[in-house]
Length: 265
Length: 309
View (cartoon, one colour):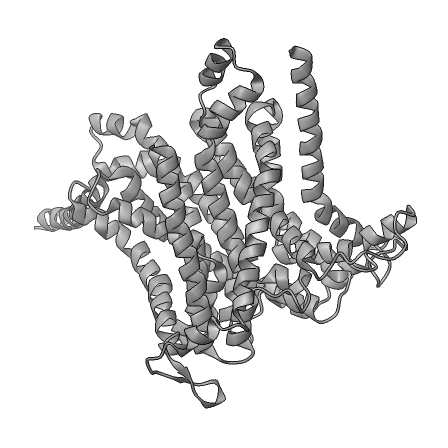
């Protein structure tokens, strides 16, 4: 019996290792070939850093990076404020009529295929004559990021409710606002920040919606990568991809650090 | 005199602050539903303006007609839907459903053992493995597509490797077909399947399994009669979360599918950005949404029957 269990276990671990190899194969290929000294991608010719060097001298690329960063910051700020207000009401207020409706409403952007979101926004903006500029794009990105900030902040507010620290503060004479400002907000702050980081990442990587509604002259990083892929294959993309991956991992690491529950530490 | 003025100057801002504080306390307490609705208003308004109104606008557009030079003539006609369902375009919808369906099935078949491992065997490695599962998901999908093109191409890595090993004589057609599209979809959406599966497996009380073993069940029996039925909510949620984005995909098909395997997402993109036939594109989008909503309804019926028999 025990022998059988062990063998089943090791077969399963082998399978899991193979699956992770599948998931990481493209990333590994990208990493290795970003150092390859050849125009054509498939053969290893020698080590070079020149693809990375080119990135830093590509003015268009640096412009796209700037646009993406500004866009992601704006969208994350909007989504965090909206998310904090909404998740406070959902996590901390006594049950009220319509809470389920709000809940369902806020998960719609997650469930909707991005193509649908993109073309609807395009049709709408053109119909009501909202210019397709940075502002309208940032609003759309805030919408896509909103479910992420809400779920991150709501989870923390719910776990704080269970700790009843606010009740203790108010027993000691704090007003509700003081208890919120001095107890809840500082404790919720890491979750707010981690939600904002998720929102930032979502906005930074969004391609599909942006593809439909980015006006002429607005080039974000994913749009730039798309046009590089469309018009001419160059190993520069590999180098760029590695830099982006490093950035994403940094953001995710920050998010994990912040979203750790203090109670679980 | 000066003392009174000072006192008044001190009192005034203090009293104003306390009024503001009263309002804030009212919002925070949320004893009245009005406070809750007020806090939820900004986010709900955002959703209304940037999601619901645009979708309504799109539905209206699907009933309009295309004018000259890609303009829109607001009329009321079902002609776009008729066109979308004619023999020229129907196969695209069917192909999309077939690809999305096979990708979902494969994700389930490949993802279930992983979720099972994570929940029952991973031990200390669980945290790391879960994070590692999410990293490719958070990577730009364009970049991963680009890598798959390098791997699967006619003169790509895989063909090169197989050729060197002497396993194949001529390069295999690995790219620009249904296989590469489904592979791409599986690659992108497998975390969407594994996470809900893992969640539902985690919820199964381990005591149930011990009870099954105590009552003489073999591991296979315990799996089939306890673990599997109790993981069904996760299976349904995972399938839904995988199938929906697969149906709307257009990047994977654009780069990995070649010219002959385009999906409904590509067709929609084409109508909006190339052919400038927005009403027809809107009708295609409406059909996509409609098929997803009916799928969702079917799923809920199925789930309700499974969970509360």
